Image (cartoon, rainbow, N blue to C red; front, side, top):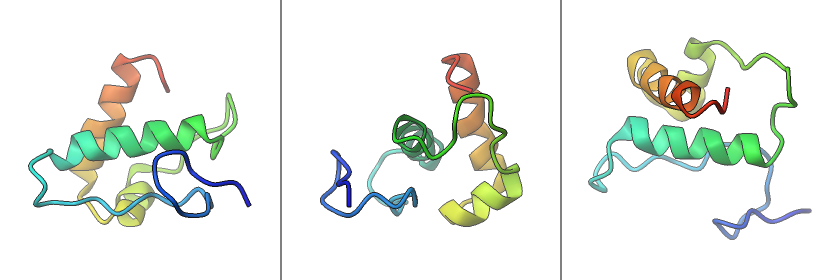
Amino acid sequence: VALNRFAMRPSNFSPLPLAPKNGVPLHKQATAELARMLDEGRWKAGQRLPNSAELAREFGISVLTLDKALAALVSQNRV
């Protein structure tokens, strides 16, 4: 089982829990976590991401917050 380089846990492509009270906005945490998941190969190049509602539910955040995270990845040409 491969280990995630950012956290000592098996890499099963699940998002790390977001921390609403750590001072970092949730959309920025979600952006970083989605980038990590992309880097680890959760989705292959050209593969469609799950819809916003599914991802938001997986992250435990609102669709609006998730959409901000996705917009950041689009602006970085990551998706």
